[in-house]
Length: 511
Image 1: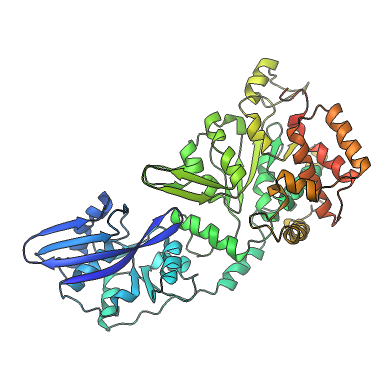
Image 2 (image 1 turned 180 degrees about the horizontal axis):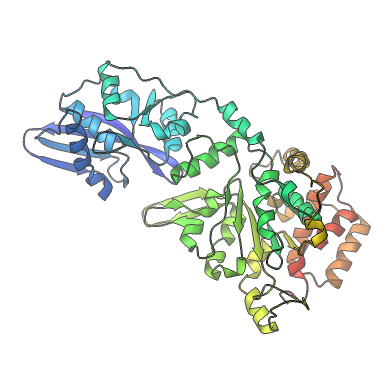
């Protein structure tokens, strides 16, 4: 008998429906075709033990299984349940008249229980698109898949549950998730709050501007000045995610197998890879491509602590994703694109010893050591960072202050208002949502300067020896400062503040 069961394969962040054809005939043998990888080839042993331990059996006949489309590589152990159900129906051990209405995925343990799989949300979205009635998944994945409305999502713990469902002996209720309730969690008080930070008012202001305009930022300061503490609190002042952003982010984390059991990701991600990270772990890839740290930070923050300690080639591969906000991984037989629209926050010491131009410093560095240290960061990478700010150590008086600082919730209100102004401004542009994404043409259109502002910018660029790359960045940041004040025009005070945030362009740093 020939039976068709439907599964799903995930490529990039999208799923493709796989038709598993099971044919049982006279003879002996187990033939699995359709470009399966080693994990799928080993499934026969898991299936045989799982069926045996639940009073069913792998028939001693010629079993031929084709995974169509046959020219598409299938990988992972998530097809165990699909194959097991197909074998049971094809060998007349169970009846399943409405089998074609469902997508079935899950990894089997030897006792018949199910292990979680990757990419459940992508699989559910594809199943709904293609008109399937329902989806069977391990119970651990059910919350993320149930986000998709209009699809019955069943979470099962054991192979017997799906057998009883098709045989009509037991009922499994589909899981229903209230996405609005899940989404309301974004408004909860954040774990890391700016009210914990003593002093550093100018840096907090800088962080607010970066969050309001989506600007990349680099913090330069000696050890213990609070760079990491400030960076960890940046997601708490970013605007709440929209439903579209939450689905995109959850989908990427689902494919990487990094979703928590809560289902929809309501909080913006914060990723902080170690400086020993390889270029593949950062941008994604591998023999079986997986999303990297920059994609896991999509719609959130990527924090690179001690930026010059990263290998130069690792930092260089980020240049294109920072510009295009997506990363394309090309292989001989396929090409995968992962979204990577993130805010880059980097921190660094001003010198190898950690102290720069400090007469009381315990360690000083020679000019040559300084130059070698700072040259690890290339000009083109710095070109993509809008704001450079020096972080100074907090004085003792500020550390012992009992006055409560401004909370993240209050700062986020101002940031959200500024983002709303930008959303209205860029509503006619498809991939433009905030100021940091503006091209040179849009900068000329939306950052018009009056005569006094132009003169101030000209004087500053000449006197501070600012590079040409700083010009566009200053205008973008000035536009964001104006938006925070709800000002329609970019004025000279906005330009003056934006000029302060280009530390690394001045002579004496990288010159």
